[in-house]
Length: 380
Ligand code: GLA
Image (cartoon, rainbow, N blue to C red; front, side, top):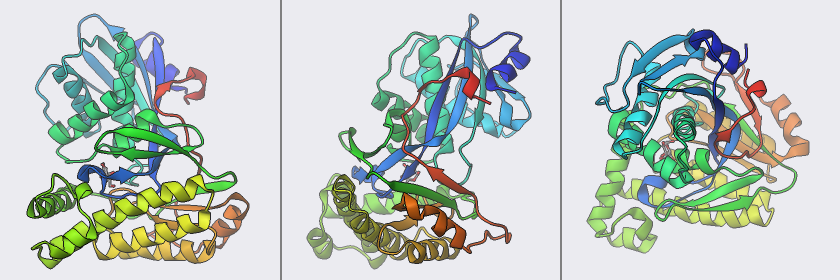
């Protein structure tokens, strides 16, 4: 059944509109976004899909097609409360609450959601869901909302209500993706600069199969360590620090290592944008390797299975590209870049197995456009 058919089965009439909002893969720039730094993600083909129709009573009623048609309903100006009976609805509730708190005049809506972003992979299934819900509700209410504004609302929903003190990267990548391009995002100004991906480069994503469960505590702890380092140096954010400042600062070894990751990663992102723009996959591969080592040794957000997967991909790809863990860490997916003509040989040779001994999920991705209207027929 298409999403529109599932909507009609649940609500007795066809949807008024359908939208899609992509997941994202971050090519480089991890845990830099909440330090006012730089990131280089691209929106990808896996996506959240939303069908919607307005209601006149203000109620939000949602059916989750991927959860057996489970239903939940609430008023958007109700105080947010996580609902253990409907955990799938928490992110959607958080988004409608954030939109209501911005004072947006929303209409009520019947909504059906489904999605193809693998969960727990670090590919932004939650951010794409929230941006998709926001895009659908804005369209129903006849509101035009700029991508950065939409991203800020989704981020506020996740920080204030879900309780992860995330940065802006995932939401902004989903909202402002551009086909064929990575996005160099300045997370202080929210300026987005598209960087064309080299002709003939292939993005590969391999999910380690190590689930990213219950990592909010570790994520928030890393963020607090970064904020402590910035405060100790008297700067607004680690974006404003350099290695010389770090050496002089009165930081304990752990805080120093956390800050060193962010400072060096910001420099790598800017170099990576130049390498991509110049079509230099080999320089990009070196930067990806340095990024992974920094996440492993200084920021300590990788796990041994992910390190092993990255090492194998790096060895198979060789100097014409690279691989690194992508996303928040503690499991999830690895991103690789290589010449398209070598991609199948690399994947054929990959021996990595998930913790349960089965082959990993592999996505051959391209950079896609950001959230927007979708053709209903495409949404199965
Ligand atoms: C998660 C967060 C992002 C970002 C990454 C790490 O995806 O949602 O804001 O901090 O982790 O780069």
